Amino acid sequence: MRLIVLLWLALLSGCALLPTSPAPAARPAQPEAASFALNGRIAVRHNGTRHSAGLRWVHQAQSDEVLLLAPLGQTAARVYRDASGATLDDGGRHYQAGDAESLMQQVLGWQLPLNGLHHWVLGLPLAESQAQIERDAEGRITVLRQDGWEVRYQRYAGDRADSLPARLQLSRDNLQVQLLIDEWEIQ
Image 1 (cartoon, rainbow, N blue to C red):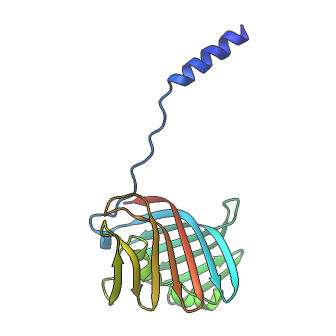
Image 2 (image 1 turned 180 degrees about the vertical axis):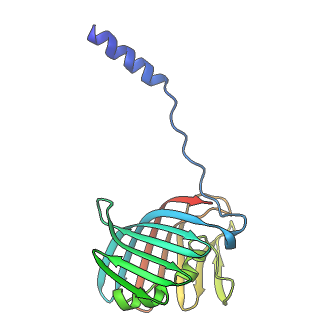
Image 3 (image 1 turned 30 degrees about the vertical axis):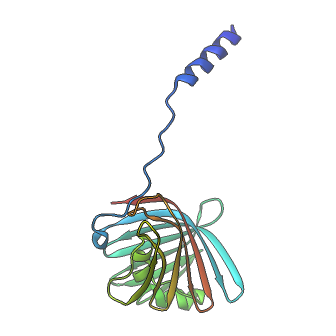
């Protein structure tokens, strides 16, 4: 009898629909006003030291929240930025500064330009400053040089011209940052 039940379950599971994979992430129609969230990983190399973490970044028009995650998914650090300033919480310690860049420099010894970065992760240059841009055959940015940073787009989430980046490398002076984006949520 158990054999019949097992065969019946195997037959039914063979009829189950396979989940469809989500469409590749596409750049929002109005990126300046877009809110997004991304999940992925970050690796930082600075002055010969290396750090890596999981990453959850929620960007809204007036604020950013960046969670750095330990290997089992627990929050190791939280950076929050809005018009009133920036905070960094790191395992019971709390830091504050007027902006996220100063705060990261003060606490970590290096900084990421969140104002530019929220454009760069969308595959766009920051509109307020000059940029040197190299593009692929689909018109997507492959290399962006702006504000002293070099951003290399190593992979996109799809083949279309409006596909969002899936892997970026940012470098400036003695700082190199790899971003691997596993999941996009665009609002």
